[in-house]
Length: 319
Image 1: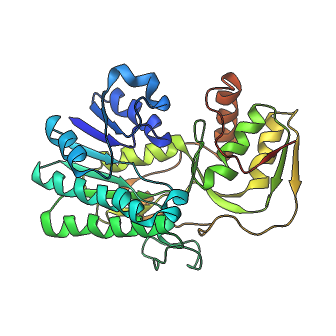
Image 2: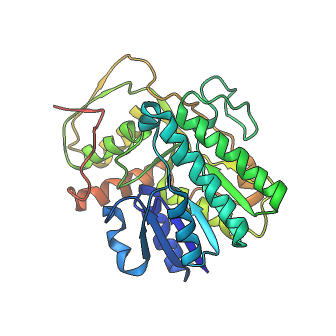
């Protein structure tokens, strides 16, 4: 089997690709960066293709040259850049999904798995938000993901392509430095691991925290499942406030200096709680990490290599 992984230089892909390699898959890693930092540990075990998700030529070339049998479509622009340039965002996020779906039909790809997002919902849906709840994205990023979901289902219905997708919320873990939810999850834990004093706004804001290894576990289980009835699923880890998670971190790192700034409005434009019963019942998924175990491992990894990845534009304030 030869798998194309887009967004190969990204956070989740850095955990997914080793899993695929360990299962004996040949991996073609596709990313816009010349030499992605997060890909370095497995760089000599993959075929690397530098390319642009907005380029149909780059994507078709990667698919045809390497005779791809399975697609893991993780690549996308994040919410911030999408708000700044909606047209380019649709070219990258929606356009790449459409091109890859079309190429998958032409090349008789066995299975197409895409990472969508809980951004397709937006605030206001009854919680916990069910898979089939009303979709009303609050930002351009969410609109591109919703459009991609629609086309994913269209290719199932019109071409019989085996397409599947997962919606994640606050995916956290060592190595995540980008994205809205990283600003009040992974980056805060990174700072505690590095023993940086913190002032944390909105500490009582809640979100669904899913450890990155459980996100990859969900992907692998869906990919390996003999069939997928619903095709698109929510995946939940557990609802916790920022304060609750950082208190766990403080107990583990006894010398952590964290000041909670009371008040403030919610920073996340997304719902808090998600119903993933369909995925658990149909595919058999259960998270392997408790929030305590995930936080402990996160702190241990970053503490051991405190300069492995430096935060980009952190929202917290170091004192």
